Length: 280
Image (cartoon, rainbow, N blue to C red; front, side, top):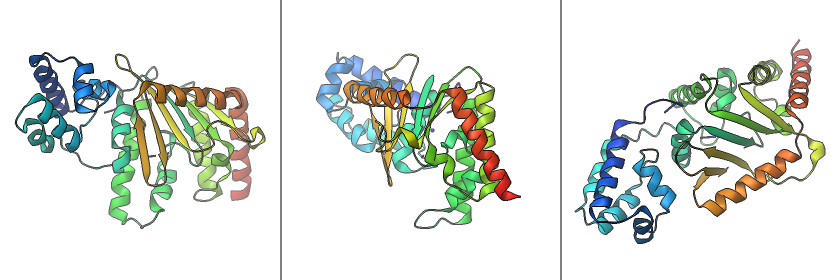
């Protein structure tokens, strides 16, 4: 999954200033968030996140804001100062920003260990693949960003993280048996110390509600929840309440078909042991 400040990490100052300026200019015109939302064709949730500094506005967003608020191109001119470093896939940038500020994260991963739980060796193997191939420099840059994402797990209490894994994630030998044994042991460690709640959807479950692809659900302390879905070289953040709710319901249904936390850790340990034997 593509890469977003660590829980409790400061939101970049430029985004905070952008959000404050947006709110100030909106209020100066006497518009509510809902009214500005309707006039700019942006969702109210999207605007709320921008005003809070949690969402980096696109150039198209800025153009609409300048037009409706009659700010003479101010928000478009502000764009370069936001310092978009493209440290992750472009389609994942918004989700990465939300991830760093979320208080609750629930993930479903159908193919790979989620980025937050990847070991350095596993992540390097994943980032070395793909088409077109990446240079060693590009791969290492992305690796640093991915490992930095995992720092949100340094705080035991927040965010609360649930990870739902398809059994295929355990069975796909990324990098070989020794690497997989290490990676699965890493997941078990987080599960055993109760930092992450882990559930596995076994092959025996057959069809389930999330079979179509990756889903990430995120909740925040003072803003509406969002959902993120991802496919091949594409990803989308969903902010519309009804769309977010549909993703939440699908996640709940799939979770109902999964093994318990304890059963899931037992299965992961068992598969890790199989890899260890194979590696010897």
